[in-house]
Length: 544
Ligand code: NOJ
Image (cartoon, rainbow, N blue to C red; front, side):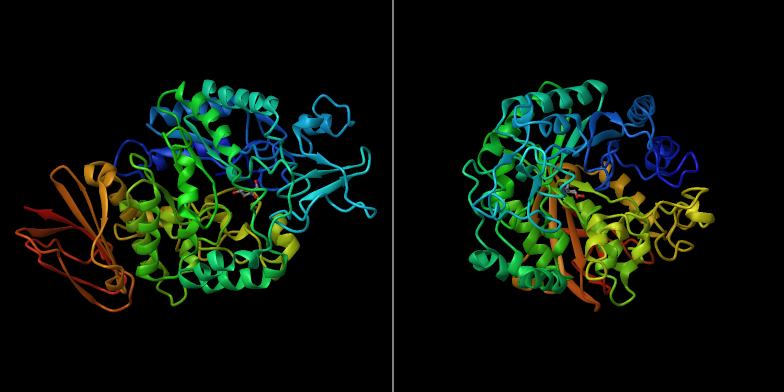
């Protein structure tokens, strides 16, 4: 929400919408925490993921006073605030990097990763590629060495083997914890530490068995296809990701978090192997509190794919820990649009919301998901994201999921009086907060009901998860049980378009329908079988 007619969302704008998020009553969404993508000082080559001062708010978004006020008012509403910790890299304009690149003798030279060129042709030190395009090394004319950047050349990687870096980042973490934030999302934490010998990464097809097979089983066709096209340039991040020393860094962070009870962390740690991702919770719960498992953002619309994904992740997690689940974020096409192939997107959106809010763990709702906001189709001129700017029209980049929140049917969807920084998504007249707030049957009303219901249900908040039936029988429906103490809930999700009759597990009990994605369904008691409409999901309480 833009508060000062500049076309960009800002902290005061968010402040004005806190009541929408949680005003303590069931009229509001009822969320418990906000994760903010970075709003720190940044030249903005990558949506703020290139920070030039970790302890200042970028003036476009507001001031430290605004953030202080936001924290206070959020806390008054029992909303916790998590900020983005982007410390694999800084901006190339961060004073640390400016100092580091000033000369080979700089006191901060070793805060970043500098290497000589190879051979007579002065080639880059190894074959590592950055995630956006091209080599991960850029030649610095002045000091005649290459520096490493896992993303843009405007995002040089910090050297995590240097203890001074750990100290400086520790200070940043303490600064924000003292300021009052409740935790951090850790950007690309699997990248922190790099191979000391700087060895070449193996090419992607060297690992085809591990990767390709999985890509074409549960993953969307597009995800598989893109990988295939990119094959010749792709590599396995054997030496620039998931190095063992990263665990030590995370333990250091956790020691700091532990000094601030009630704070939390969630990692953006990517990889195909759930055991590897789970290892970042720490063998003794001494690393991250939570980690995203990104597999779920790439699944085909199949009950069995979701079931397998959740089971895999549940199995891999160390006991005593729990998952962080998300279906969308600022880097990927909105889930609703990924699955909107036959005009049944709205029904799928409800089904996904029901799944997200009933699985074990902490659910992350991406802004707008609660109003079924769609991905925007943007033209070349509208793009801001460096990925889209480079690859358009092959790849439109990530701007389509970053468009302004749709508050109302007014001009600019009520987001701003000025031209918004990105165009609006489609059908804003239909998909906006104001319209949906006054409709008891909208996805927004459904989401509110579900969130407030969840708060009252120990089985949903902290109960066990158990999938029901065999995977082979999950062709149409993904069914699972959540239980805590005496409370037992069955969640039945019909991914197919056809009606499905699903039996309740045997035993001497009857089921009571608590909630369905189908608002026309009346309450039902004494159930032994549930008849689900196509794309319907429901929660059933087992009454002994
Ligand atoms: C992951 C973030 O989610 C993405 O938006 C960003 O481009 C990269 N990290 C680099 O920071």
